[in-house]
Image 1 (tube, rainbow, N blue to C red):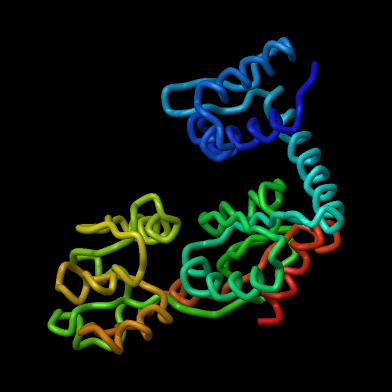
Image 2: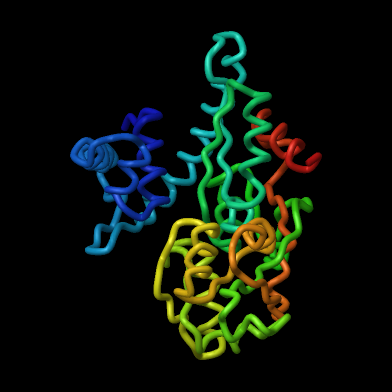
Length: 294
């Protein structure tokens, strides 16, 4: 039984994506080549690694065991590459960051820009997830650093304060809700919404909050950024929920009004979460220190 690092990396991508197609894309392989590699691994092992279903894959018990060891071996290989990178003059390392939507759109661009400018031999693999998903994935070793809402139970993970922001409602100045200074989220659900793509972490978060009061979001338009949400709100397509920092930036140039949300979840204390600072790769530790300093 021989699995090389490319095999292990592919299997990790496939297992984490829940799809051979998406895993192959993450591994930069053609679907046919990825499928062949997975089959060859199963033949070499003499047991199935994946349960294939119409809507994706799940690892078998053997697959879960392989995934656990693959993560450890790939992390060790990455550390070796980092330690030798300084001598080779090439790329010294990659940091895997998992972030919720708020931090990803409002705070990480500036933070990562300054860090990468100071570390030209480092790359950052940044992925958007829900905060509770991030905690589980960091604990499993899927990522190096997570950025989550401070209200999430981080379990045994080490956490540090990162930023503070809040979600607010934005409406057109002519909208009936524009006369209000604050409102409960439940009282907004009779109105049409402009939001992010339904698959985005933030939009899933808002949909869950609506479901908890027995309602659904009447989502008329799905966009790819909070700034675009503000623009469509200005055009009276619907109301939207965006970070206060986004609203403050756009209210100066757009005919929109900010209405505060009364709900406790609207306040967003963002936290950095990691498994073990000393166990992080060197450049991941430097990124954590950079984020805390800023």
